[in-house]
Length: 105
Image 1 (cartoon, one colour):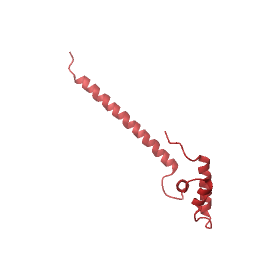
Image 2 (cartoon, one colour):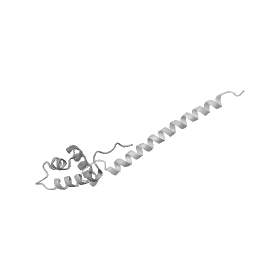
Image 3 (tube, helix red, strand yellow):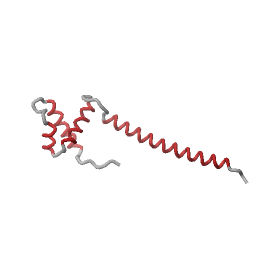
């Protein structure tokens, strides 16, 4: 289960949109993230991370997009589950093989 988020999704989206728009304008791009973070009561590093992820999602920055990261996490969960199932099957197979090797009375 994921930890609860400190900031609501609406605030994240609004802050990210404002920061991306402010960074496009050369006159207001210097210190835009810190200024917007202070205005909205968000930690500047949190906003900087959101902006980086938003830029990655639209292709303006290289990296793993949110959808790719979600897909990777889903595949990793599936791999863990399959490995666990394989381990259970191996244990069961060795148990039954040992039963067959015992001499009958």
